[in-house]
Length: 500
Image 1: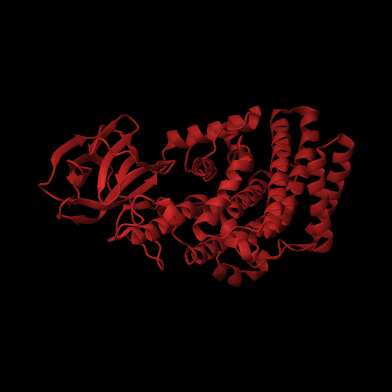
Image 2: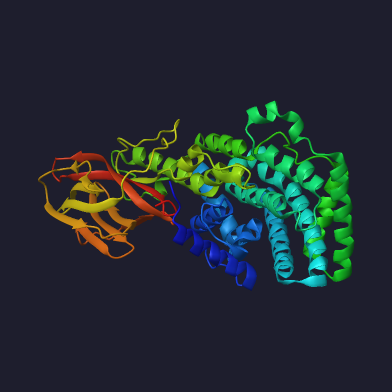
């Protein structure tokens, strides 16, 4: 499986431009943010061959992605979507704590990015001065992130906060990875890298079995806790003298106080590895998902409507968690560049996510309240569309590669329309109108629109898309030949565009 080199480079270059120009990425879509992060990780994991500034700092590019122009809206959306699906909000007092942490992380990211840019531009004696500033800022930022992590893991709100935790973990692990990769150039000693940064990275990304087999490898040296303690103390002193942002200094002082209280602790959950934690909390959250009839008003009162609504809520939960947490977790163990991503990890980040059912019933959906959809290998791309429709959609069939797939619905009902997709044409979204039947359907690609098929007058249309993903499958829930005949519901599968 390969990456789309052109798309990954384009996205990572936009993130680089935002980090160096100070003009933040303009996106209000959490799925678009996730796509930027995955593109940056592809660069960091050497899946995409690049040279130059894209390789200088992984965390700076991650920061450009997770703190875009409307970062407050992004971080709010991360928890609000899950809160809605589990019908349980984070308590206001704790939400304020998290918002304070996020604000502090953003301020640190801006300050750290500025120092990295200054270091990259400097030469001669100025380079030496900037190297020391970068060393101090890296250690200070790292201590701030460590101090923040436990607030995103509070048991009562762990599910709702999981996508936020995942982005904090992106920052934490990319800081460690940068230190491991570039620390010698930045003035770190080899011992500090080998005895502190590398063990911490391994502790936070290794499996439970690896931790048990190599317990001594993951113990942080108290000597280098003292080293970090002294570096942070000096960074605070120098920052005050240099007029550093009061908000950044406040986070450094808070982290310093935490080090005094717990000098050797990675976090209050020191025994949790990040990928395992994400997967555990994700599964716990699935048990809490509830369907809200307001999310599917056109068919909520129809027979089979509640069944479809419950399955659709689970699909939305799964898709949100895959894009904003699980995909990152698959790649975290490889960010340091010291091992290659496993075939299992790559298969998992290319997994198909689902939207729907839209309409009635949930027959044939490959997930349930107790089991997420299975991870399957990618098949041939969609190359053709065949729809039978009149007042409603009677039949749907998609062509994959050179072969037509399964026909859903009627072979004879309605009027048949057939279209062949052009080379490199991808279906980005599908518009549907559904009530008792799927009344209207159209396919929207990166080149044109096919349809609408079915009733031309249906008004309540739902646009189905997953930003950064393309349609890879479409299934029917149930067909009825009784008057009025037609397909009664569909669900759709999407896979990431970064993996052609």
